[in-house]
Length: 613
Image (cartoon, rainbow, N blue to C red):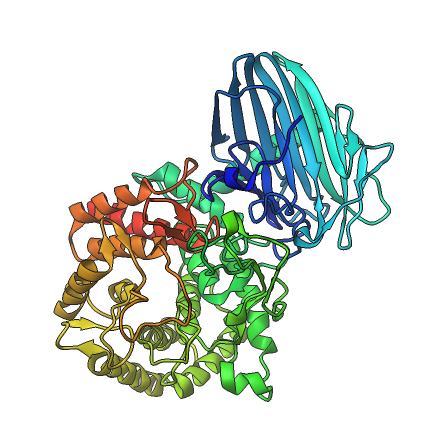
């Protein structure tokens, strides 16, 4: 019988792999437990959330019933099919976990969690226990045995569990046990079904077909990659991970499939990242475009065009926040108001667990630069900007020109009063500069002379107001003395030349104060004048660490860049996946996996490859 873990036995954040179907995703731990799953789509309430609470969250456990001497986890090559291998004194079994994706934009898509258990050697008894907890663990499910298997009704969607072997129900937990001998297979399939419908019982032949088609889908998608450099397997795993965060039905791209995984174990910096951040999505598209994946960029550009088209200049929030929000749900709506789930203890006791994100009410001016930069690249490498799309961008630029001098909450989403962030000024410069480039290249209409004047004004403002002579560095805010890893973006976005003395001295200052080994803090929250309005500490930001690699590369310090990059690869988990941060002892912290980290890895690798020749 498979029993639940105790709170002290909860696996590390990094002890997981991800599977998904371009609509939602699940995390599978190295002990064979599905610790996180939101049925139907990423931002729906979870039914498995044991990663946030071992006792109340709900989980799907599957493992040998006897002693396990070792476990291994890997992906079938070039796919999102995850294999967990259990080595026992009696033999070896493999659990192949996947969510079927049979073809792109499948009109008949059915969401399923498929768990295929195969005996590799020997004779091994296994057991499974499925404990569905609705609404982020708030209430227990009431499973009912039916002809096809077990029906698990839910307020949002219905679930149906089918199996090739008998299932029983024990106090709300669905259980099954079977002994497999060499070559035998057992199947367990959890399917999201329309209300009132029952699926057919799962069959070995059908599941083999689903596995083959899903593997073929992922290999076919990956085959379109243009990358053939030194770190191919690493880059391709990051690309698949980014693809898993694309919501195919809408074109939205989420920041991460999880909520409230802590930036400090036991701390309160726990946020819901299951939404479309304009910044994160724009950078994600940059990463995918660098590898030749243009379909995702086209889908997100269409999604974004709808958001810009929906912007109402007469709405009260327009003047305050501009034509775009910082983040949206997958449908392009304002997410549910941020609130805490008091019934969950959080990952390893890290409270609070939050749903929703209050950053939606913040002004973050940098999003416009990241957005327009990604569209500039899409115009360069994709199918180009439409007339309506250009008209929308001109409207956005008009707003930027009238608002770039405002204080804001910055790219780190501080929960303090707004400030004149240098990175926000920088990305406003990017927005104007890229619009000028596109207009000139394509001959599109626009007041290029007026735009150029604003571009130069922003440039001079940064060079004068954000430069600290005493520190010989640019600073986090105008007139400030706090360093910020966001300053590493300056040569990456072509604001300064990589060899500009002001940037090189800024790089040196960042190295002295924010870099530890190859790891980079985004800023020092304990420094005078840098409070972000939050208690507690955080780890180094892996995205910033890869920005550091790219900054070294562009500064011509190629050997140091390669060493820093190789060191960063050692902080990935056993599958090459990254959370948002790395802690003091090398542990992964924050939501997992994190799109921002993987896209910055791709950017750093491709630029370093090119520099090394």
